[in-house]
Length: 317
Image (cartoon, rainbow, N blue to C red; front, side, top):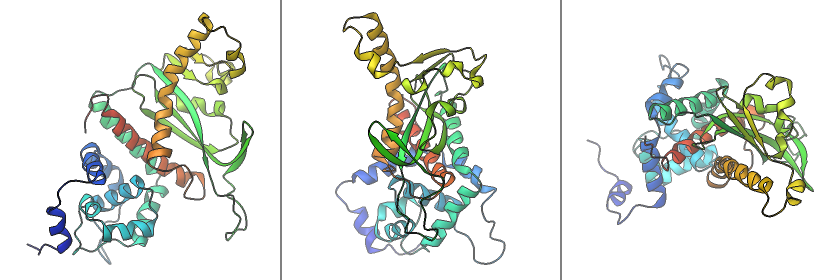
């Protein structure tokens, strides 16, 4: 048996667990590790020649840590050396080989090159479905802006060509747009699409529907959605909000206003994933150039959000 290090000994004798430790304990239980690893395993290095690769479970856990705390590759490497709770979550010891920032980068590139972010989100949803948390008869669609750097101080001397600027209200934004479809009953995300910021919300709505809906909810940005060609013949009830200006003209006790308030109470569930992704996980600004790299990360963050939200629904990992 390896000798216990000073860091491990001090960790064992702590008086209480920190919030980080409690969160990591919870994610340890919630994440379906075997299911996720099975999706990556076929693409992961077999290690037949050269230096043996790190175990897949170690690299997947490090990648999850990186996303939990929105860390860069160098910061992730430093954290593994400095923070015992992170090492334990990654199944590492201080006496082990610690993956360097290049190894962490290469694992992320592996996920990106095979488009595994979307597949892992689907796998998490399948795991939740096996626990009884399945899709129901309604979908809420919405989109949020995620800003990107506007600087041109880079090798190409230009802004990211896959990002774009758009105007919302009286404010201009530059970046991308995350479109999601959320189950109207559980509030869990079942689909996600990324576009440049100037893409209108309504154009991606068809990609956010799973096809078995009876009801579709959306804000005023989706007005006229039922007239579009891609929804021709779709038998659903469209619950789309009126424009804010029209709502202001409604009488305080009118049936019209009560109907709009009922619509809004349903649509509120779609804001929760945005809060987790941008407010809790800190991804309110893109970290990479290009849509695919950012969407690969966002899909996993949405999967984490589904797992955490499933707690309040009574589903456990």
